[in-house]
Length: 105
Figure (tube, rainbow, N blue to C red):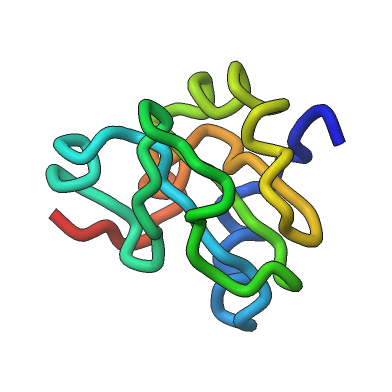
């Protein structure tokens, strides 16, 4: 796999609610501390280690950043993470908030 599929905030919400996805926030600690999607696990891109990612590898993994740019730019690196399928949250946390979903601050 050399890239990431995209998933909308609405599709991600359904997958999270069904227990079918692992959500990984690749932003830095300070960004995550400022606000984050409640279900997101932090794995900063600056020290990204696919072997250390939390979650059930039989599920899909969805990576997100602020707007989707960082995630898309590093798609090949993120896609090689060992999950059943890898996705990028289209529009990042900003799209999640625009869809009306909660964030923790």
